[in-house]
Image (cartoon, rainbow, N blue to C red; front, side, top):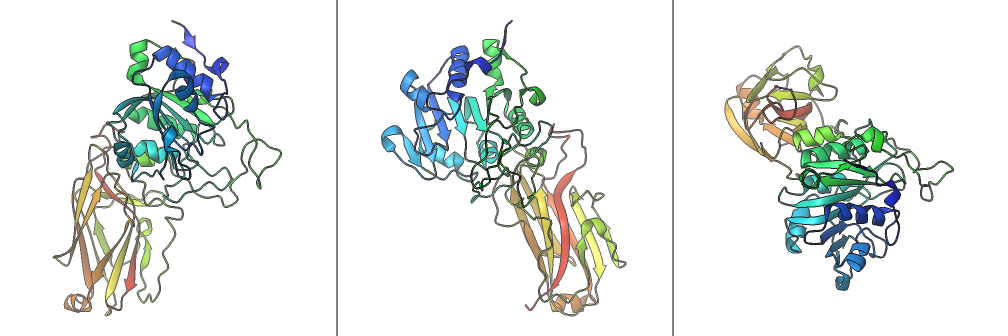
Length: 410
C-alpha cells in the first residue's frame, strides 16, 4: 500500500497558500459525494479554500463571514459563534453529511468545530492552527464571542489540541501545509473505506510545521511567525474542554479574586487552602493547582462566623463535569436544612456567569448563632472512566476555585 505525501500537491489558485492543491488531491483520492461545502471566514470570497472547488469542480455550498455578503455567490454575512453554529447550519439547510468544512476565524476556530452537533459529518475538515506552539503543547485560547485577533501569536489552538479534538470527533490528522498555517483532517470511516494511508497520520510531532510566514504590522519583526503576546495571557488545554464539555466561562483571569467591596467578614479564600479553624467540610477531593473538585452526589461544610450582618456566599465555579453522554447536572443548595436555590447546568450551553451566590439572611444567622451549614445535593455526576474518557474513576461534579464570604446590605 502506498503512503501518500501531500506536500508535492500544494497549489495556490484562489487559496491563501497551497490549500487548493491539497484539497484537490484529497478529493481525487476519496471522491466527491454531494459536492457541498461550508467555509467559515472567507472575507469577500476572492481568496479562500472553496472558490476553486466551485469554479473548477462545480461544487456548491455556503460561505460565511462576519463582515461580507454576496448572495449571488452564496456568501452570507453571519457572525458564527459556538452558540449559533448549529442554528446557522439549519438556516442554510446544510446537509448532515457534506464534503468539506473549512474554518478560519482567527480565534474561536476550535470552539466552532467542537460545538458542531454530531449529526453534521463533513468528510474533510480544514482549520487554521497556531504553529507558534510546539507539537507537544496543548493550548487553546479561552472562548469569547467578541474575540478578535490582535496581531500577536495569541490566537486559535495548537496542533496537539486540534489532534485531540479530531480524535474525539472521529477524524484523522493527515497534513499541515508548508507555511505552518492549515491542518487537514479526514473522517476515519472515509479513510477506511478508501483504504488510504497518509504520511505520518495522527503524529503531531511529524506533521507539525513551524511558522513559515512573517507577522503582521505593527508587530512584524525579522523572525518568522507572529510576535509573542506581550500580555502573556493564559491558555486552556483541549483536555479541559473535551473532558468537561465546558468552555463558556473559562475566560482570562478566571482565577483572580473578585473585588470584595463592603466586605466585613474575615474569612475569604481558596478552597485549596481551607484552613479556617472553625470550618468542617466533607465531599471535596484533594485540591489541584487552582481548584478543588466536589465529590459526586453530596458535599457540605459547616462554619462558625462571628457575624451578625446578612451574608452573600460567593462560589467561583471553574467548570462543570459534563459531556454529550452526561449532559445535565442539578445542584440543590441547602442552608441550615432549608432549600434556598437550585443550580442547573447543561452541556455546552453558554452561561453568562459560573459564579453562584447563596444569601444568608440576618434572621437565619441569628437563629443559628452564626453557625452556617451549606449542603449541595447533586444529581448527574459521573466519572471520566465511566464515560470512557480516561482512567480517572473519581465521581466529579463541580470544580470550585474559591468561596468568598461577603457582607450584604439586603
